[in-house]
Amino acid sequence: MQTMLIEQFYQENKENNTWKWVLDVIRKHQTRDYSVMRKYVDGEHDILKQPEERGKPNNRIVVNFARKIIDFSTSYIASNPIRYAPNVEKEGLDEFVEKLQAIFVDNDEESSTYELIENGSIDGEVFEYYYFDEDGQICMTPFTADECIAVYDTTVKAKLIAVIRYYHVWNDAAKRNELRVEVYDEHEISYLKQEGESLVLDTSRPDNPYLHKITVLVTDQDGKVKPKPVVPWTHYVNRPRKHQAARDDGMIEGMGDLADLKNLFDAINKAITGKVNVQEYFKNPKIMFEDLDLDELILYDEEGNLITDVERKRQYLAKMFWTSHVLVGSKAVPITWDLQDQHEENTINRLIESLLDQSGTPHLRPDQVGNAPSGIALKLIFYHADIKAGIKMRQYGKGLRNRLRILTGMLNMKYRKQWNYQDIDIKFSKNMPVNIVEMVDIVTKLIGELSHEERLALLPFVDDPQASRKKLLAEQEEEAQRRIALMDPLAVDNEEDEDENGSPGDAA
Image 1 (spheres, rainbow, N blue to C red):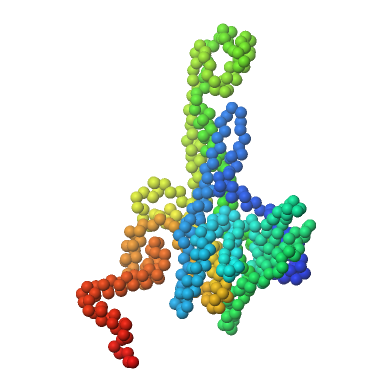
Image 2 (cartoon, one colour):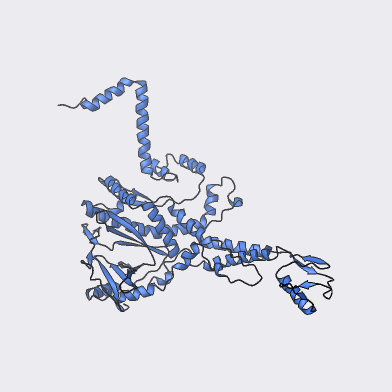
């Protein structure tokens, strides 16, 4: 694979029906462990494996900042639905938007997109597959990074050549799991199964390779529009690994939001657990015996036998002291422990602040926000979150545009149209708290400087400025008709008669 371009290598091996390189890529992909960060998000941290020490408390405190970071980074850019709005006025565009929205409703696009961004934030990458079902309906299905591999060409353009999906199925006759592989390229789907140390075409399928016929419309240099086959997948990358960008195996790996935070999670859990253990250990005071005459002390062991030997009495008392049992002596003095824990408290707070700063997660406290903070104050609090959100929106925006491109091509095939996906804008709406009064005041002051739709776009609670503008005009027209009807009912009746019989100027 290292002596030629990946695309050329792929085509030659496919023509020769040679698939061993796919097995090599799968084995390399399996060296990545996606389960670690998933377990941390679910609260299964390494502190839960802490060994127990005899005679000491063994609390295992999990402060699940992993869940907090993923929830925030996902909901900040995806809890408000992503908008798909036309950016031009064209004949037939309303029908295009209507068909596109129907696909999104049928496939629960809002939940699916949220899940995509969440899984990508954990694993670093995520996939989405597009196909026609048996009824001819357009479907889109997400897949996690541990079951799919994106293969790119090693040219500067980094073209997506194929997507490899692999999984295991149970062979009841052989009593074992067997590897199954699906390879998707621009033209076909090749279904493979493992035989020994190689992959071969699955002969149990009547049509293999299968022609998927998914295309998109492209414009050539002469301005002619023509269909072009495309890999029916989108590979969403959360953050590309910089040292992986020029790898010669065609694999581009992504980094999740938690990839470099595990040590901080563990340090916080250990620090808080250690503090709780110390407090519990010294919660009940130990007892020190003064002026205790061991010769005169009558002492029995656990089995009720009288202990007469002084050394055995001393050992027994030491044992009882270790296990915090209180003995009655001539004089008992409690030993208390003055916990000077300010240093530990400062260390925990510094670790938490470092974690939240590094992850771009705001640490909102009452002393920060106060009562109705200004827009500038909120922006400062969310500064690091905005930087991270901007990077994520650019990365996921690439994938969403490819999703829109492929779905548009499928709609064009289904309805024999030539809709252009570039006529639709994709807009994120960040879920940041805002000072509504301040925003409305700013928008009001911009009257005469910006159009009505541009001013509406500045308001965070307006999802579709164009639709809102049309609704406002319709309401104003309705209100004007109502006022006219109140002032002169005959005028409204005359207008209705003209609409039914045609305008006065119309000739038969």
